[in-house]
Length: 546
Image (spheres, rainbow, N blue to C red):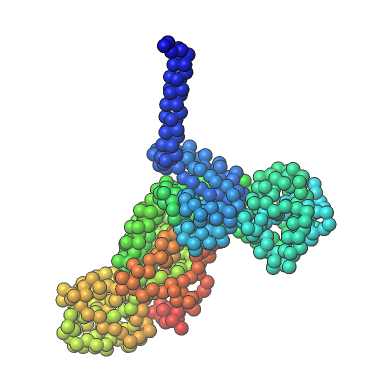
């Protein structure tokens, strides 16, 4: 029997078409399962972005992709809606919220890590230009006025509006007016659009939103003027590459990159860091802090993709170097500083933000194992023929604190007079080794410095409130990388174990000792006058202790 030629051809066409379709489906499935990458091989970054920041962030994302070849995928919505999406999906790299409270909530839920401030915004009433009938919140409540506002459960501007008007007792009336003759929208941009096209008479939006709509006018009212919100961007805990995410966050929040775009679009931007693809931070630290800080710095550098140039020395030497660098206007002034004691932050306080007390350590008498000279107290240091090591007061904190301690017992001059002071070391790190190898019989040193030689020395406790050093951390007022410095502080705050394993006592959990993280808007001032500032150098710590 003869087969029909057309039927055979149809079969081949069908089979061939099926193969093409299957191949196409296979390719699509492969693409869906493969990580998206940019031109330089880095994966795309997914950013959950508050809708009100759409215009500046689209511009910043294009600029970043043009410069580094990394595509940025922006997903828009109300801040609360986005937070819910992040919590459910456990995906994405960054979260940009219109109010810092959402970033704080994300961190509390374990969804976000590092945060960077970008700009400040506040609610305003938006009306069409030329509409003089609405100039206050009371005008919104008049019969017949149609109002749009962000939903408090979805948009940051709605949540902020509700909070502010609850304080003034106007929220229930406004809520009723919007429900009866207006609309609650999931994003601030939808509110502004409704006003622009005339669907409503007025809307409550961010001041920055009005700047993006040519036909709108912002009405500032006293009920909203205090309602400042801070726009922040945070790295998500589930970020596929936290270092890459941090790099984009730094770019978006840099004073000479992303923030210039925000500024041009009417936002009140923060001071912001100077942009660098690989920033370098100079960190001056008293020698006593080295063992606790080194592992923290190493981890911070790797995650942030930055370099920390840590310089350890006696604090007297470090502060003298600071003054010299300032006077000569040379490069190298520290971005951050952690002193061995508050005394040596106080002496340069005008150059730094208010310090945050991180830890403390006791000053002890260090003797050889077995205490062959039977030294039990400060008074015993005056024993005949003893060789004692102390710090040099002009070069290190332990020297200043030891002098003060000995002066309180009327021993400082006496030890010199009887010839018992064998050496004055420029840093605390040199004191304990001199006891361990037998160069001296005893030394006044920090407890933390005895750990490395624990098999060779013993520590004799001193019964005095002056036998303590408190280690503060601070960021330089002139640093071009303040936000990076504050993130280093955040990393230190989370590193209690590192300090306690190095022998320090942790202070951040003590009431009144944690200090404040300074305002990112550049309004930082040196610390307020301290009672210790007017005290003689030797009595500075005593004044603080009072």
